[in-house]
Length: 69
Image 1 (cartoon, rainbow, N blue to C red):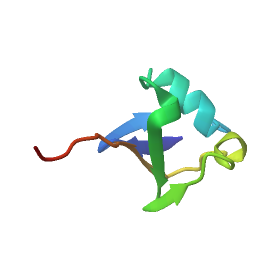
Image 2: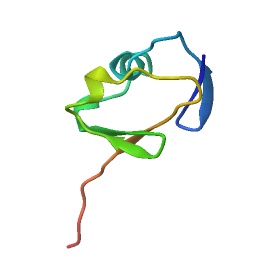
Image 3: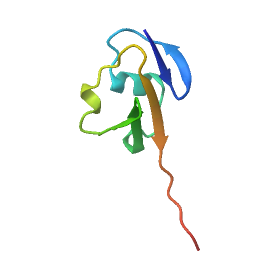
Image 4: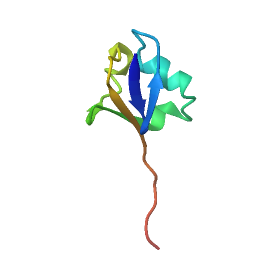
């Protein structure tokens, strides 16, 4: 099946889960990454149960700390 990951179309196996995709994409520090699936945020509590479907759009959002002096 075809999905879009971070703006790039990819062929992946049917029934791929979100945790499998995170591992396949070698996401650094996945515990600090927020996942957007079809423009909806996926809660950490639900990530393990998400099975991807044809045409899904996934974005990995890395939040950076910072501030002013």
